[in-house]
Image 1 (cartoon, one colour):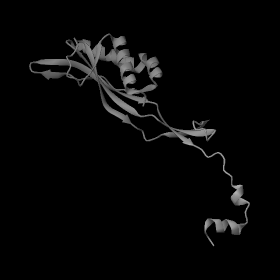
Image 2 (cartoon, rainbow, N blue to C red; image 1 turned 60 degrees about the vertical axis):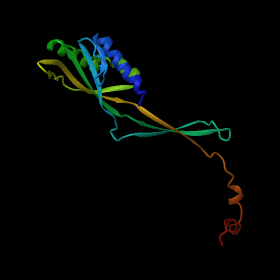
Image 3 (cartoon, rainbow, N blue to C red; image 1 turned 30 degrees about the vertical axis):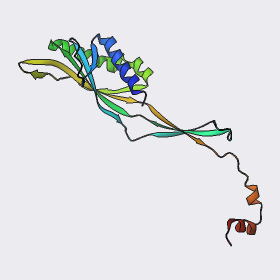
Length: 183
């Protein structure tokens, strides 16, 4: 996939700039920011749909022995799922922040996604994810996002460009058999 850290940082920065809320990983022991805020968690990473393509290209060789090499590229589009939750002291604020975050994933973040070479495949429904904590509720709403990234893996293969077959082909059949050790 692309540089995963670059993609994650781009999503965090873009989501923060659009919503104005802090965006932090959900699994952290760090102190939580003041509410309202957004958390994210990658719930499944690099799931392949099972399809890929192989593309060969003729390139200039790095070896002085050859003029050309073959660059084979395996192209695939792995997906990963991201869980997004919003937190607030007020249920309505948490819901509104979840709506804004989902809007960013489905529309406003498009230009950033193009730059990161990713596509938002789908953004799920916003649902109530509140939890009771002792005698109080933690107001939160959330949704899941499926993201697909373009990935290319390259392999360079040196080619045999010339070989002198004349020395073997132009000899009589008997000589060729004898030179192979067969009778």
